[in-house]
Length: 574
Image (cartoon, rainbow, N blue to C red; front, top):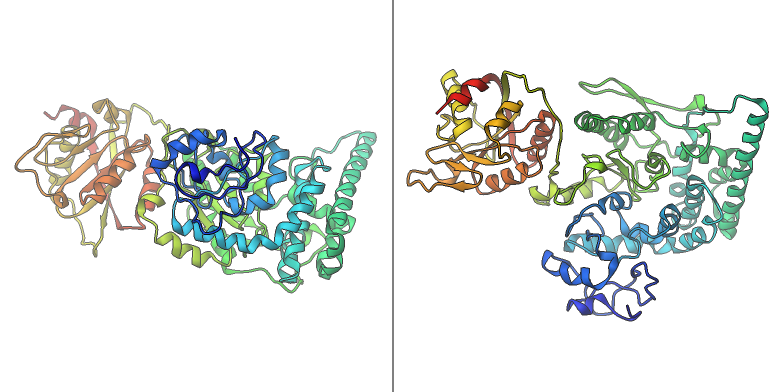
């Protein structure tokens, strides 16, 4: 590829590309040509781009929000770790090369799925211009340090150079908050005295090398650092900083309670349990945002026992001790827990991630379950100063862009004799009370297998059902997932029989089966968008409840508990 060739010229539009030799790894991102707008990609323009550069063959995604513009989608394994590519272009290039021997996406020209993402990207770039010096310093010295987490400590100190001129308190707070509230716990220490001495000597030498490189990288900026930041350049303070970052590369762990909990989540096998455990972190994040750190330096402590904690409890979960200083509640450097989760790889299996903008986002599915064709959207648990602003932006997005469609392989016993259904009403207007009579419930049970019975009481309403459905129901619908009209007309597997008596859209009620198999929610969303009512069926009750939570952003929800359907009777209905 010619070094002066712009991708934008090949597609008839402009694209941000630096005229730099390709080096066999893709292009570099830089300022766009003067007078030409950035390229907003659509599905129709992907084909030409993929043919242009090998770096695009793995798929495309929005540089800011991570929205996938094409398949395959496995690159989300990388994008979720570097969600803000505007930050990672400057701050993460060297680290990504060290981790995998090649840049991840930092050299792919920025792509945007919307004008809003483009504007936010430009705003971030303006904020990061002062950090270019720090990035160059980090790139210069990071290759001399073998441990990823030691490099992060160096990277953090370099980052402080850019921030200290604007706000010394803001530059010092992440270090102070992180290092003053730690658990010091020695694990896996060699049992033999000689081995212990050798281990301690090796650890001390590695730490001192990293500290000296940090001092050299700071250079003249060392004099500008506030007094409470300089303590972290001393041997003890620097060791505490490294301990807060590194939970895997040495035999000494300094790990906070929330990280212990996250690592427990990471070890879970059941997807539904893991999702539920992840959701339990939300109250802690909200509490963190409402209770910012003490910024006057009084929270600086020397011993592990001074780790100030807060007890956060919530319903249906055991109270856990969380350090309220683990993540600074402002837009800053909050990547440490994410890197500690990585366990020396760039492919964490847990659904919790921390990006470079100080936000926490939850991917409601382990990476191993990501497959082409599965749409993923990241839910943010924002602890930054701009959380309210970002929440307002998120509220303007469509319900389709906010949902998460997951493929779930959970299995349930085949011997269940009944399915307990919980009905939930979704209404754009003020909901009216809904009372189901036994005869109406029986009518619904009869309608499920053949789609010919009308359900009394659901006219002009949107209905959403959450239920644990056993294998027998899946055998009735062998080709599930499918969708069936519950009314005068029969609709099977998406092919409807035209009936002159078919009610208008707003009076139709559809049953969507196999909703947890990957495409059921998408089908339901299309039906809901058209004005129909929907009953969503699937094997995993937890996933269906998650869908309900996502849909509650657009509709008021009501739960109506109360009746059971005999599956054997449903099978016998003619």
